Image (cartoon, rainbow, N blue to C red; front, side, top):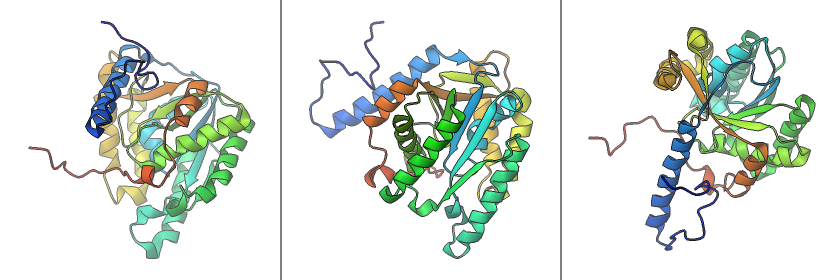
Length: 289
């Protein structure tokens, strides 16, 4: 079956763009499916340790457990891991009058998770969640991430998958690319799943760690009161299990070379207010029969 370069990065000289917005949407969805298929076909089954030094960028406390809790458990004691919590998670309260209390609660929950993972001093950047993606905050956030990269010099940086449904999650990639440009460092970037399914370029068997991952998820009591994230974490791990023969639970990642990651982010709009509009929805689709 003939194919040419990566359809996301290199549509080719004969790309049939017509200016019709329906064409753009159709091609974008088709290219997304191609991206997923190519990673699936060439997936790599990881074993630990696959890195000596790891940085995990976390937009909201609990994203790290949902996306890669099993992987972090497998890396415990095998790699240096730095957890970087970027926002204070105050919007999780759903009530402006108790947001300060929610921010303090989620910071305490994040510290508990870090201790259980053997990470004694997580980085709590604690940016107000309401203003996280404001342009005025960008220099400070890029500088904080750059400082961590310079200090740890990671082999792999985990960040939410680049095309995540949540605008804050995509924005983390914008900040990371800025920090990589500022430092000149080019680690592998591994996109993890929170609200969206990532192309499974890297797969890791977490069957043995799945019960403990679910216990870690329960430590985020403030969020478990809002939604059953344990069920979501279990469902996703089991759904991915067939990617590794004999596995009962799997976490998947979208891996990208550092230089390609910076190049790719430069061609995307991850920072404008318009790009921040999408959020994760768990409602029944109105198209569903």
